[in-house]
Length: 427
Image (cartoon, rainbow, N blue to C red; front, top):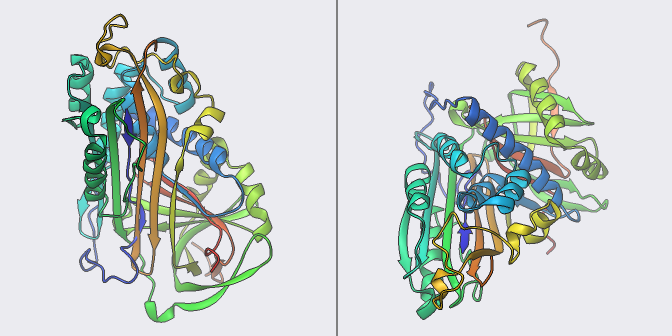
């Protein structure tokens, strides 16, 4: 089974392109997003997983960009079909607050908040299942996929032509992510033994609430962790932003148009401070920092931010296994709530299903007008046998050295993306 997710977050379209998001009006009406207590608990769990996942993935000091919301949603599609110890393990590692069936309903509520179609910003979520011809899924599982995840069901012939199925899935992901995520599933990742592919995509494109002037963007020095200096395009503006101190770093909120979404930039006091900030970045720490930021008033700020683009693609199994996802990724996994199982049948479509390789791909583009980002996650599953006062001076926020960034839904608190910009690649 392949579970994929694609997400577009902060940033405008490619910086070389003219914006197609319309003209900023004086007043925007934010799109509402309301969650009940169980939905709020699901967001708390998502954010806890986001930071766990980031820290487990943040090897070295290079650029990194992840979509925990995409990964969590993708694995959530499989979680609905998990049972017993497998379900318990996934619930613990992913911080899901409820057992599979109940969580599917709550997560559907959360996903419905991740949809915005308004002037200057778009946020969209889509799910789809590709199932091997002849594979008998549980009626209840299919019903929940359709009702809670709005996941369309498509039949495929992995056994007869895995390459054609792979091409079809990749094309769908490209369409859902504005062509930002290409070739999510590489050659060889699906085969004649693949029985199902579950795909989640999330796409976001948004203008800044306060845009940068292209005329103010200039090449300038960016200090790397190792002390080297590279020239990058630095964007500048003076406007009101909420900024506070957090764990030896500055934390700034850069809202997108209408304020439903924001990019948070966590800037260490020096290039060498990145590792320490990342090490101390836990869910409780971030929550305290966000509380402090929420209490801060918008201040006159001289803001400098690189114009940059990030892309990342890799296999998530090592990071997830480090977090404790072991049984679910082994031949002992139990996804009997997903499909009809007859281990004694001579027909492989009747055998238990297990999860294989988990793939993830992301894209982020940040320029003067806004942000655009995309991400994709794929889990390959193969059927196997067995399992106000006097004006203050302006704040200076100069992001000219490595920083951590998050794209967050301000209405629900959900972390959609998290990563680090360590500087431009060599060459």
